[in-house]
Length: 239
Image (cartoon, rainbow, N blue to C red):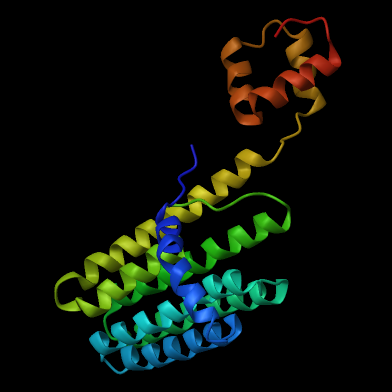
């Protein structure tokens, strides 16, 4: 069963009213997206020079800007393809900038530096897998750590770095890798896998082919795909 985070649902419940209030001021969603990117860049600079706590709080402001842009777009009826594209690209830039600043700060500490690189790679691949899946009309909104969860944990790591810095980095690294695996598996489960003709022929004609092997084929190709392929070759054969 795919794991879907409920965190975005809770966020939407809070940001909806704020988004409607901001929409009445006339501010545009793209302006909020840009402000979020600017604040995140400022946070990355502060983190890079060692001001982790201040950088963490500035990142909170950047995250709020990025959170409210979608709410404003929905409230003002200004959702469009470019806005969605711009928001997605800004998210990827923000991830790279803040984690790049953290990596620079940790460049002389090999263990946590490598952890930060793993977090950065996992965040990038997580987003890429979803984008690629959606490009071929598949759903991929699953995973243990989506962007919102990663952002909250990173802020916690920065603001409370004296106590939880490395443990949170480990959590982000391991959780990020798990999320990539979950998304790849989720996409794999949605793709119809064609059975080779030779495999179907074995099912129909080779009695020596064990039931265990057939069961394994059903699991790999999917019960429905397996049965439909066999039935197409021999409609009278019992499943």
